[in-house]
Length: 151
View 1 (cartoon, rainbow, N blue to C red):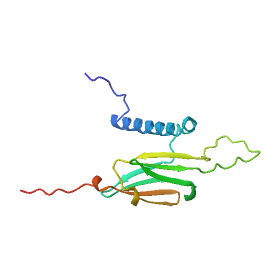
View 2 (view 1 turned 90 degrees about the vertical axis):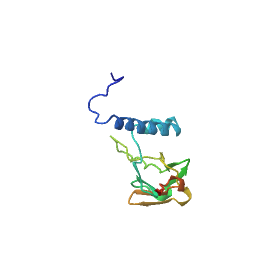
View 3 (view 1 turned 180 degrees about the vertical axis):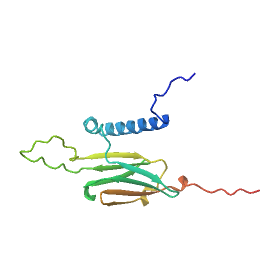
View 4 (view 1 turned 30 degrees about the vertical axis):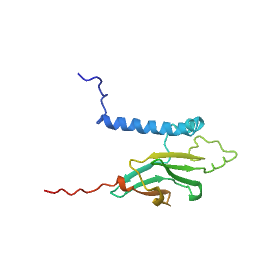
């Protein structure tokens, strides 16, 4: 007899666990930036990122529309990549009542844990059309090695 039962609607319970893990990572990241930052950011994640890999590199892409290179800080520490921006919010227009004002993010910080060790010194980044692309070469010990089998 199972100890617990999954609610119907989950096609795979592991997907739900992964979703919860991502949510908790975002909560911890926001808490690390202070309680006021947590109150401001807990409902969403910004910027949206993808992390992919091939045999030699990790590729991190982030959507950063309207952001220029001068206001962006990118760092790698302890196998994690941190994106920060201190972008100044646009001033509110006088005489206008806002019903919703979501676009004026004045700053953000997002840390993404990397699955393998990387060589931070040789990482490359570019920002084009609002998309940041970071290429992170894998450390030698993180690359797969072919082992020959003798008979």
